Amino acid sequence: MNFALNLLSVATISVGSVFFLAGTLGLLRFPDALSRLHTLTKADNVGLGLVVIGLLPLAHGVLGGLKLVVVWVLVQLSGATVAQLIAQSIRRNGPSA
Amino acid sequence: MIVQTLDIGLAALVLTLAGWTVLAQATFPAVVSYVAYGLLLSLIWVRLFAVDVALTEAAIGGGVTGVLLIGASSKLRKAALSATEQELTPPLRWAIATLCVLATLALATVVLSLPDPSPTLAPEAVQNIAATGLGNPVTAVLIAYRAFDTMLEKCVLVLAVVGVWSLASDQYWGGAPGAPGAVTWDGALAFFAQLLPPLGILIGIRIFWIGADEPGGAFQGGAILAAMWMIIMMARLAEAPAIGERWMRIALAAGPIVFLGVGILGFVAGWGFLAYPAGFAKPLIIFVEIFMTLSIAATLPMLVAGPPIQAPRP
Amino acid sequence: MSAATLAGLTGALLAGLGLYGLIIQPDPLRRILAFNVLGSGIFLLFGIIARRGAVAGALADPVPQALVITGIVVAFAATALAVALLVRLSGETSRVDLRAELSGQTRGDGADD
Image 1 (cartoon, rainbow over the protein chains, first blue to last red):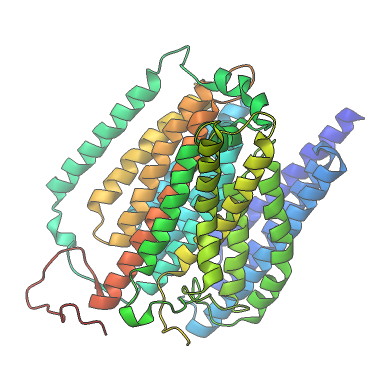
Image 2 (cartoon, each protein chain N blue to C red; image 1 turned 30 degrees about the vertical axis):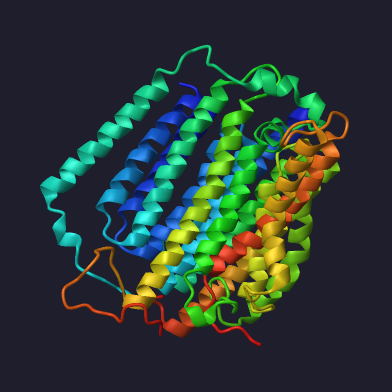
């Protein structure tokens, strides 16, 4: 049971880090700022969610797992807000901003 | 083996980001990479088993300093930089680089030749911690063993605020500074600033409270509370307070004054200046820490907001 | 090589990088950035000394940790004051320059506008 849980954790965290890698690849390779923003917010949030799911079996009790989920929600919230702000700034000042 | 790779990878990332901060061509990428550098540096602090320092570095070193520098880089973008670059000819640059390499080698030699049973104060710190009632040795050092340093640090913060305020023009003294970052009204930011602060204030108070027994403390909790206030000001949900307001000045001065008051109380009551009586130490420490957190939460946004830019309203 | 030694060597390199940036960069804001890099490198040196002082009760010597926390806060205060000075200087002279007097540049002495 423990071994199966650990294996699940490792697998989920690995898939999560693949998403992070994909997001970074998009950041480096996409042509303009808006599409780069798109990859960052989508891929990084999914990656972080998978990493959090993978860490939940290893957390210290229910409260520790709840804290991890709160971290994920806060990162999504702040990531979404910053993406909106950057997109507004790009729309106002042109793509060179 | 895996842990070694993690350490080497972290060190390489941190050095790359620091190199980019120092050597980048434009200013804004340098500031952004400094913020990322601060956050990764806090991971190195976790690897050194100094979690309190990691929290402080992430909150103050990475977060609040980042806000300050990003605001500064946008304010200074319009100012022209006079052409001083050509004063540094390539041979001079090489000489300076050699000097810095020598400094690095000297520090590295010190690192590699530290004495092996290294002298440490940890046994004394841990032995005497029961008398203070705390569980976290770093908090005990900050508030009990080296309370004088911490009190002086609070005074330094107040002096820095006074220094920043004194840069205002004479007719603006007593007025309000601009919002830190001076962001125009934006729906997404206003929504965020309504959603996050309740949770953030809870988290800040919890991190301050838990600092007595686990990693945390007044500085880290106070920095999170300061960040919540800065978000509210940046989203224009509340304006920056005028520096002449009485509650603002009391909030800023409360930390050092209470700390000094407790110290003088100790001197008067006979158990020594800035010492605590056995059996009553923890309540006094928590009392001092509450006002320290309040002061830090008031000071950091005022330092970022800068000097007043409008005349005081009568 | 333990994590602590690697962190100490990283701190030494950061201190060297920061020092180089502090001397080379003409722009004062970049100098402030390099000064912060230098400071955090020195703090990492404190960190290795703290870690090597580990003993049965504590995983790291708490006294250097407390010194570093104090140092981070004071460094932030100094950075804030430096940035405020810089912004005020650029507001007054509409340029960012640390050289004292430039020929032909006169502003009213003491008259605030």
